[in-house]
Image (cartoon, rainbow, N blue to C red; front, side, top):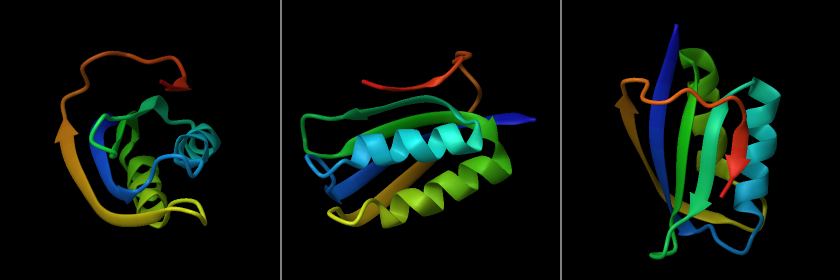
Length: 90
């Protein structure tokens, strides 16, 4: 069963390759959705997939790429809203 997670990542997570890092891992897992930078300096991820894959993605997001400094990750589990066919960077 597919689930959807809205994930907000706070810290030093822009201009460090965080979106590409997220896309590559999401693609590896077969997760669909998007990642985007927000004006406040955080990163938003909306991801749909198997619960185990989403849990793996969330744990990877807590680490981030080498240059990032993740301070906090907030996860909001949601009902599946829209079917994405791939994972994209916005």
